[in-house]
Image (cartoon, rainbow, N blue to C red; front, side):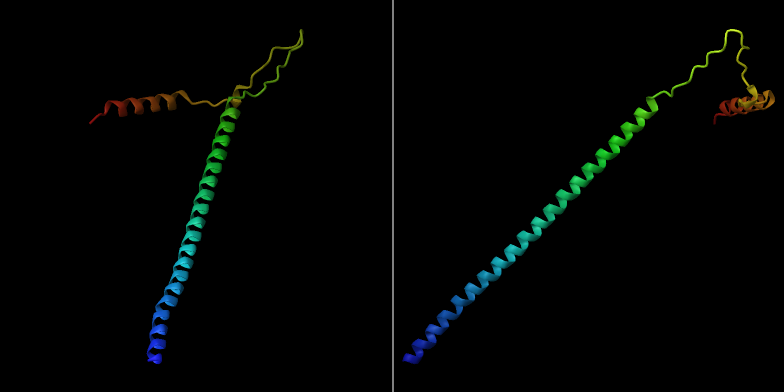
Length: 117
C-alpha cells in the first residue's frame, strides 16, 4: 500500500515539475521573441533616421545649387582712359552660322512642320 502511495505521489509530482519546466521554456521563448521584436524596431527606427538625414542632405544640396545659380558673377568694370581708344570686340570668337546653312535648316523645319499625317 505504501508503495502505491509513493508511486501515486511521484506520478502527481511529474506533471507538476513538467508544467514548471514548460512554463520556463515558454517564458524564455517569449523573452527571445520580445528581444527580436525590439531589435527589429530599433532597426526600423535607425533606417528611418538615415532616410530622413539623407533627404535633408539632398534638400540642402539642391538649395545650395539653386543659390549658386542665382548668384551673379562679379564682372569687373574697366574704365577706359579719357583719351584712350574705344573698346574693340573680337567677333571672330563668337559663334556664327553661314546664311546658306541657316536658310537650309529653316526650310527643313518648315517642311517638317507642314508634313502632318
